Length: 176
Length: 74
Image 1 (cartoon, helix red, strand yellow):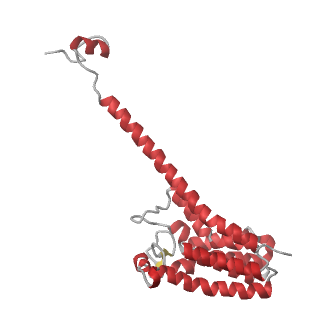
Image 2 (tube, chains in turn green, cyan; image 1 turned 90 degrees about the vertical axis):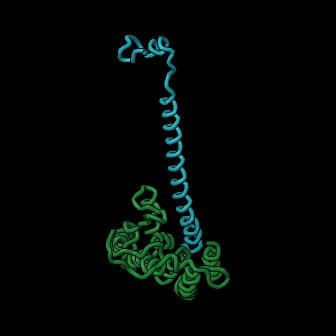
Image 3 (cartoon, chains in turn green, yellow; image 1 turned 45 degrees about the vertical axis):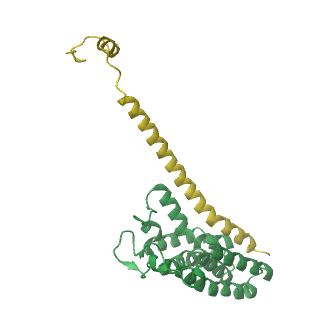
């Protein structure tokens, strides 16, 4: 997932405006940021044959990342910390849907979450777009709707900028 | 039959000149192999780092733009 993580971060930010936008958006991608570092260091092989991302993407790892990252925002108070933590945790259900490998409960655990099948997700459907692409769109649209509705009501972000953010996220989904 | 190197006193070059024996090419080939392997290893590392940076930018740029747009406007 890519655009869906951005949409989740924006939706959480709209629900809890006390949390800075950059913190929830970064939090929504935190497991991926760890994955980039671990893959670069050779801890998590990224090749199709030996793909493994349990250290960055297992349920236990994401929970620990959420606790540690939200603790960095203690100055925001409990609502802000919860928003940041929720943004990190949002990575789990979103990546559970479709992922190169099913997410593990903890690194190297045989117990996995979801029934994600990368090949199943790659099957082309309408307009030549993959099943994965359509599922991500189906997740992203409600999250963006929530972001738009809550932003207009609860935040001071002007409507034109909310619209611009929505267009950017949808554009990124179309592009990738 | 020519004496072996161990039977011949003196240096390797002396042994070679005495016995019209050319310096084996293996060490050079080995050197080249090491050089190529080393280059490939460096190349692999560069590709890997480049991929990491590309992935990082793919996330960081949209996050930065959206964070700026949605920053506190008060």
